[in-house]
Length: 117
Length: 109
Image (cartoon, rainbow over all chains, first blue to last red; front, side):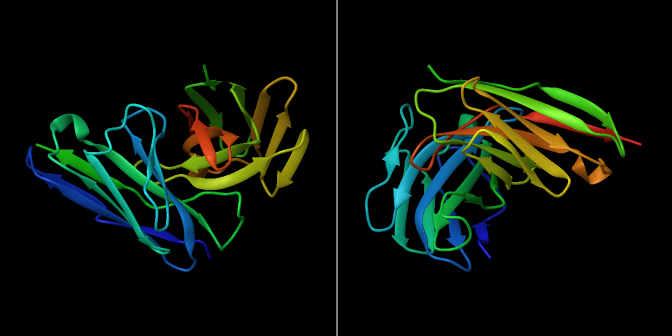
């Protein structure tokens, strides 16, 4: 139980385009989902927290108009990187907390590697 | 400010025991997580300590001292597949995790 999937696993896009990343909880309902970013050899950095049906809470320094988060259902959250630039190239990972497994543990998706040319 | 310190890299021999230390200073603290992360993959949950003391789970054990702001992850009977990064993360608030930069462990034959 407590499986989280992400799609796509990797994406290459041109500068200025938008990219959407999906995060799904496959076998449980995710009341809260988290979006992290990880640059090479650096720690996971929380970008935002989203609860189903409400607006995401962004961490300081994360532009909410650039990183659009939608948590429309209890099994799906999406992150859209708008007008992507090379500095947005990173490993984006989502995690979820919900009705499966330990309620105090975040279960992570496999990540999405974004490369912006 | 918030800070988590853990060694950047460690090397150990297959079959041996290795201890990965983590010290933390955070504005809030509920508990301490350890995650394993293989290169290019998402972290997987290893352990969560809330109370002081040692918790054992198979080959992996985790220790916490809240008064010292200190934790360690102990890996026994090392296997080649244990080569990965090990992330220490402090739960600073309800479901809020602050991650360290991770310790890259290399297991050699």
